[in-house]
Length: 394
Ligand SMILES: *[C@@H]1O[C@H](CO)[C@@H](O)[C@H](O)[C@H]1NC(C)=O
Ligand SMILES: *[C@@H]1O[C@H](CO)[C@@H](O)[C@H](O)[C@H]1NC(C)=O
Image 1 (cartoon, rainbow, N blue to C red):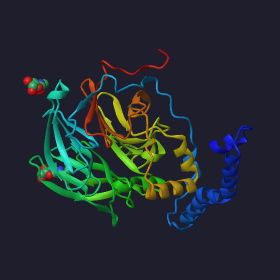
Image 2: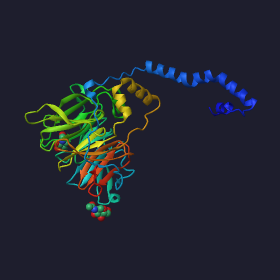
Image 3: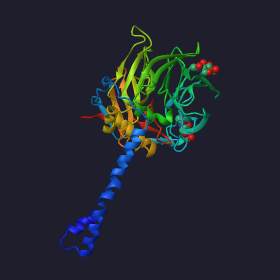
Image 4: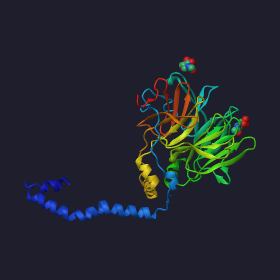
């Protein structure tokens, strides 16, 4: 490039002119090699690859602008503390046992860690409690001192107070779970949980997004009958689960669709489904009720323009899948964080930051929110009384 610019100048020597001529005569070949060949190869790989993404149904793609959240803190790491740095590898969900004052979180190495929280982040004590041998994701404290685990690899597990692990369920209607993900328990003891995908495992979750078919299910497990029921099927990556405080419905998040739905378990609407909150300012992971009138939704990333296009056009998702296979996935996630919504699903406050991504679980304990992330080796804690979200117009 620079050479040809040179030779175009009148002061260029005969020698440079000669070189330019040679370069020019080689130009078609180098063009062929550097540009046409990769395109042809790429097209060939595209043709030969059997991965077959589906178009999302048109009614699922009525993309609207993300909801306006009245209060924001766009620099949530300012004033935040890290807990258990280096001892909590990719802590996904955060369950709290108020009686013992401990947090349970599931790590990428299969450990469920018990964290005794302290006013001083540095004095918080991390203990390796039990190892599931799988990938513990959603967690909830049961009614008998047990911790119920949605384990991505193993299914729904019961870890008793003395640390013995039992399998509760790993299939429904003859279809085995592949990515058991979120869990909560109702006052009557029924466990509600999701299998994000019966086709792709935790490490393959991106493929589920690329394929664009609804392999997720909302399920229930009744400890008195040991029966597992499918409540809702054909969900797009069914993720976090929260039972409403009045015990009337169960909320579940569909990550790529940036929404949470509501399945009624009591009352006259029992058995029906509607939208709880949609057009979220990011992709939802776990959701948890704080006992004070708000649900907290972990947002793993904002929705990028590239993803909006990909959702619309299956061929883009196929290219992304091929890239994932041969090159790897670029890190495009940003503006992850936490969203508080009220009992009716109306957004209240949004905590996030540009360089924060893959936030997977949020739990409000006292004045703090505790955030888990599948991207970090610690739990993030923020005192939201001292670092509140404020009105956007303020
Ligand atoms: C916090 O940790 C310090 C030092 O280990 C301890 O003395 C204190 O009792 C702890 N506070 C709470 C509330 O557990
Ligand atoms: C978990 O196991 C304990 C001990 O056997 C039992 O008391 C509890 O009910 C079980 N929980 C569920 C949800 O099955």
